Length: 173
Image (cartoon, rainbow, N blue to C red; front, side):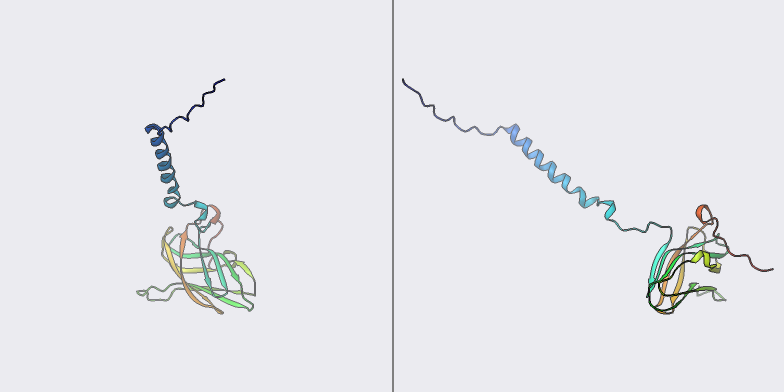
């Protein structure tokens, strides 16, 4: 019996269609991997999930600091203040003085025990003569008796929605 041994078929060259399909796939993969560079994952972007601003002055931590008012004078200071230190502290908050003003702005202060956190709106802290309209930023000078001074730009918000109960204390007649 004679068996024929077939010689292996010569290697075929890849078709142009196959090569162009592979190259198109590689190009698409390279193009789509660059999307992360131009559009970062949003959960990796730090932001403040609050209406106000935050500030750290020594062992004082201020969070969600806003001024609630209509821009015609008295505003209420709202937010959270925490003494992170081991000793009592006095916190003073005042509007940054206008260089053209004839009278200095009023300020408010609150006492904090070690590791105490307070809601500033419930402490009755107010500033007078603030003419920054709602939506604007009012520079504030924040002073901690244990940690120094910082200037913070706090937003002025109208007393609406969940700030509707944050109103200035009545003045005596």
